[in-house]
Image (tube, rainbow, N blue to C red; front, side, top):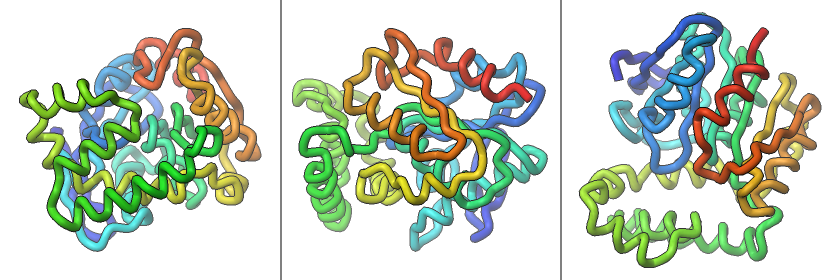
Length: 260
């Protein structure tokens, strides 16, 4: 990350920008840094100034205790300031929950988009799984068992044991353990794991909720529920896409939606 801005509490937030045009800030999900959003930023750069950043507690950004969702909203406020005072926002996975909260908080957001925010309303036993995950994650992090915390997240995301074991043996595992405390941040942003309909009803700006046509039905239904809860919400499905969306499939949809 080439640049830094200071959030309201003094935490440095590292970011990069590419392209020219109206500002679009891309918000990553759990266990991700701003670099994970770089391909999407590159795909938008011909029409927008696309910003990627390391959320607090990961990558090159700082961290300041105690954590609160409002601090991450303030991080976005600082980035919007660096972008010229107004921006569109796009959040992927749990980053979408942060984008929705930022839009509801009255930041100068022109339009917002979210891709498959994993609210568990339509997942079988979803609410119970989220509650158990929260309890176990809190215990693992309190006891310093970062590897166990990463495993819990990977299982919540539906990864099989053999994939988790392969990750444990890979060079990337040390970095995943280093980022493990930020899992608590994403979990807090997601609240109780259910669509926050009352909060979404207060969002004054247009919101596009996008899902992959090949994603599980519960994720598609959760995405549609977000669109229905926002007064100026709309829904879009991307044929053939999954939760690991192809940036080149998502970028044209965002570009059309964000173009003034």
